[in-house]
Length: 139
Image 1 (cartoon, one colour):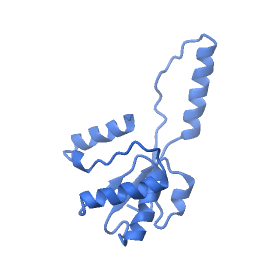
Image 2: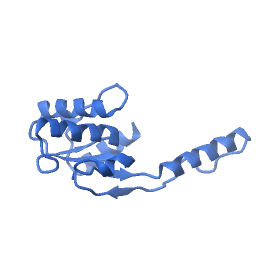
Image 3: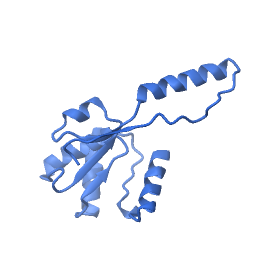
């Protein structure tokens, strides 16, 4: 939810707010759902030329659905995912994604939890571990 809110804020700051283009679904994220959401968005906004997905599962499904529907990625619609899952570099086209240090996030969370269980105060409630934009063929 914080990722989505950050994305909305960045769009607002750039003067690119388009809430009518935001497609949400309460189902668990999956490749299949990504295809469904892609089709739903194109039905609503056939001239959309770029899509950011909150994770790579959804983006991978959208790339596959675009192939089925004859939509050329990125010529007609550019796509970007989030998490840089291993399969993203092997999609056709290869998926552009945001890589986050997921192992470091897990280690930090485990260390904080262990410290709290020992009755210690966790000094930093938030840590900026950075990210990396993995530019590939889908954007």
